[in-house]
Length: 110
Image 1 (tube, one colour):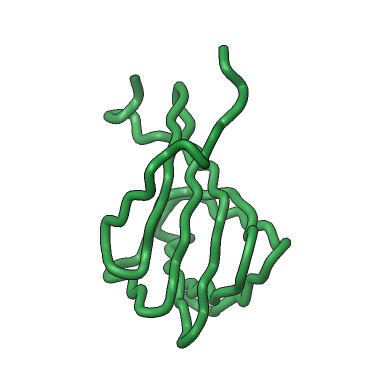
Image 2: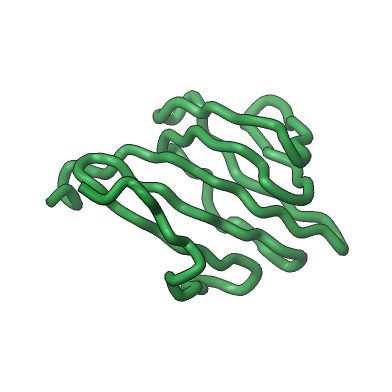
């Protein structure tokens, strides 16, 4: 089993304006390098679970009942579920690079 993840060799994907990512899937886990930049607007609340670290930059994580400011070096843990719904807010001139570890949805597991 290869234990090295070479993100440099992976192409960026851009599913929506203001976000791009690189992802590696293994078993029931996904490792994503995600960049949010000015202009990114999350249309819906995310209810998936995530754990990760802010590698560069800063952003605000909006939760249903409050917001948390995260900056370079901060780590995050978000359990799955509606009660933990969240979305990133990226302000004017901001950019953030995150490394996220996430469980794969059962329908996507290989």
